[in-house]
Length: 273
Length: 329
View 1 (cartoon, rainbow over the protein chains, first blue to last red):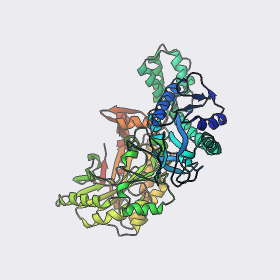
View 2: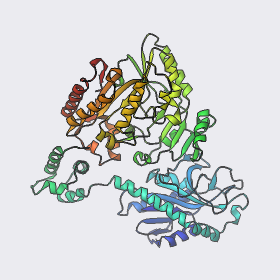
View 3: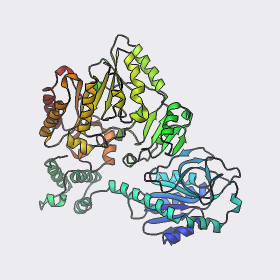
View 4: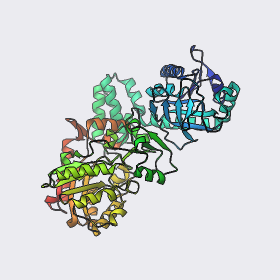
């Protein structure tokens, strides 16, 4: 699953269309669009709105049956003194213009586009800096999304909407929609790479399938649940056989007997490299 | 080689920084205030970062030279360690760095001259004693030699001080810089060695056993002191057959008379590091072995530990005299 946070409806529209997202009726404050594996929230302009919408989206996502880590992506437009309108980038350094807090999103795969530094400001500025793109949401989004995920899975993708020659006053909803539309191919690559990393991370910490089966059959205390998970992971590391079959038909009265039986089986396994 | 190079803003003009940036000018370079902003962040995944690590160029402020843990001793009275780098390009599943650090990115401290001053000071404070320094505690001493020039920079310092000994702990075969210069008594190139099946499955990205043995042989031919580090010994059901064959192979290549020291230790780990490592690799065979917690340490069950140590010790002492043998427990 990936969560997208965008500021404007005109930024959201091309994404809603591209990913066939449906409007959710459960959210009144921030418009929310959903599919089976993607959530998109429209935050409104500014970092406070972005932070609030990110938190709301995280709460909504936490109530879904999907388990594990979730990838997060802030998509939007930004200004840059020298970059051409339509240029796109992933932010690998983000600085909040007021607090000067710096963040460094970590991209693990081959980069799907250029990268740049990004400065988040509270009010639109006329003098764009030389070495940073400028937006109004990212530093609101990033630290909040990070609370629910990890540095490898929270990212910011921006398209340049204005520069020193053509300033932000000339931006219109239609032009922003076009900019995002024209960059859908890259956005899809960014999204799919992030989802790939996210899925790999979730697979790496997956609980063995046999756990659910055994947890249904035996009443387990919280400690026994942890012990069973650990023992089943050990079993999977050392044996290709199914633990349920290995346990056979022996009647085990309770969870304590189950854990003892598994530990006996573990002790008899060969360790080979 | 590196996904990104992060550079502390205060050292942008440092010659070592400039040389590395020039060498990797195609790599994205990002300026930060302090390496900790990246390296010490919460919510990082060491395992996944290891697939595409970044390099962080930094300035080490203090604690440049520290007393070494007792078990590092290879016969010297005073033991210290220093780390010009944090993390390693290899990906050994048993490595404690996975549990110690939040990030798998490499940190290179470029202010070598500050290390030199501190090392000089430490040596000069004890002119009557032999002072041992270990450089491979938080990184592999030689693995990134072409980038860091570590050995080239640091060895002249130890060459000058007859009452010092430097141990370079490594699995690397980057020995060109060493072969180019004359060997000297106060330097020990200490190779970590494991049987083929362990090297192949648990020492990912590291040179295989044969390559390491070849490097040792070349270094011995040029007169370098070699240390052999059989640490960690890894338990497996057929450990006797595997380790007997392994020691035979090692000592049929290495000139035992020219070996400076041999140390032996079984797999062990501070419990909090182990917990993190287990979380990173929940289905790792190494962590599924019969391990037990004793005080704050995870180690093999005492019976297994004793069997491993006793057997390996007997084997090793067939090849080298006891005075060169240092068990780590």
